[in-house]
Image (tube, rainbow, N blue to C red; front, side, top):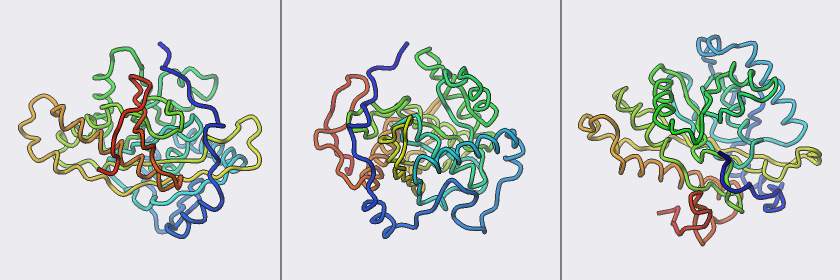
Length: 299
């Protein structure tokens, strides 16, 4: 089953300007996430995690990603010092293009962590690179197959084992014509709450918003475009865990929806800052109806 609609063309948005990047650089410490330990030499790599995830294959893929990004764009990031050195955590990342998914993935690899990441099963069938993705941590997701619970259970298991997990909570490339984060699926909320319940503590959850890749022409990417990611501070949701011993078989739907809503709003607030623009006054893009619905992302 194909995804609804099609992503809007590159012409739908303007490239991220040098002036906006300069403004962000005045407010944050921007680093190059496509090199090892971009936040400084005091960072310690999680050696056990690296050795457990096909280190040679990961290094080769990472080298290839670095070369492509340096040739086609100027990538910067802030907030990578928020990435934990050990233990499980969740990264909820924006998904504007197929290109920008590599930014949080490569950034975490360069920070010495090796997250598993949920990606559509079709990627596993891509020639050559599909097998590579699986070697370096891709967890294939069978979309539209009635397997949501199995996917959630696999994700929770990854976190309980002590490994980090990266998800793209929209479930596909945004269909918002202006390329904001569209409606988010409930899986990210369920996974975070259920993993926290089983571990008996709040699993750190971080939002990662990336902007700039939407305007890149992948056949002729020059001149290089600006791409900026914010790896946000930990999203708090401890208040939703207060009564977790009384949940029963799974987290209550209202708590799942509340956490999902927090992720959605935070991603768009971060996107506002990176883009230097305001979220559409008409509201968010609802993937189910393919239309805008009113919302205050700052509420």
